[in-house]
Image 1 (cartoon, rainbow, N blue to C red):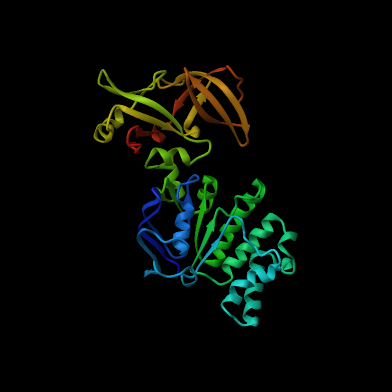
Image 2: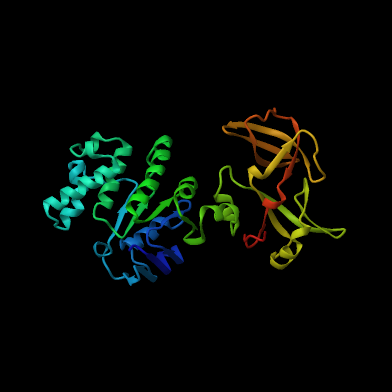
Length: 363
């Protein structure tokens, strides 16, 4: 079992609140990612779970047992840092075996476990090498082996892919998913990289300034963000966010962005119930903007091609409606030059509307 629950966790460093009234529950065997920028509270949350830091308020439970007063060694939690922290004078075998020796397992048990983990991670040929003889990816596998060899209830990974190049990061994302299936261990991973989080996690907890903003599956986070921060942080290229004013014109409810207006009459009841003022933001993801050479229907806006950036399999296209810049995606067959005129429209089923003041999602 490896269920982890945080209830009302608050941690302060002086006057700074690093984690604020955090409620988070991770199911046994679940792969959860903590996602957020630097200073979001991810690492502090990790250290609280591991027992390295003690919360000022709240409870930590592992398998329904309160562990606030338990030292790290008694929580049966393994933690892997982005620095790997391998012992430079010990071989790969000795690095992986170290936690088992601390627990005073027999030499035969240690050998069997180390060999089993090394085979799972594909590092059996490296057991006699020193860390200085390893590549970045190999060092990471050794650090992982040392973390999982004692079969912990939960594995905490603090930005484990940060020090790897782009190609190796992509490979290791796949390796983590494969290992998760084989080990059936609860994994909590912290990362500032939204691609890592949404590609690996069963659920993703988006944090900022110590607050948990949304905890959902990657699909829900992408398609149904509950606030402006999540909407802008999840997705690449990022969601377009346009400042607008709500206006009522001849019975129609419009978002006035200055250089264009967008009819949101179908959402008028939701907007009137939830908006705190007339100041709103319209959100539309790049793939939900269509471009054509001719005006297909009334809800099209004339725009100018500002920048075209090949990014196979799609083209990233910056377009300008008046002074408003928007990012769109087009198929690689799309041909246009800077300054060309096009007509653009938004997928009405995919738009988002946010309250500018509260930053909460209305539509």
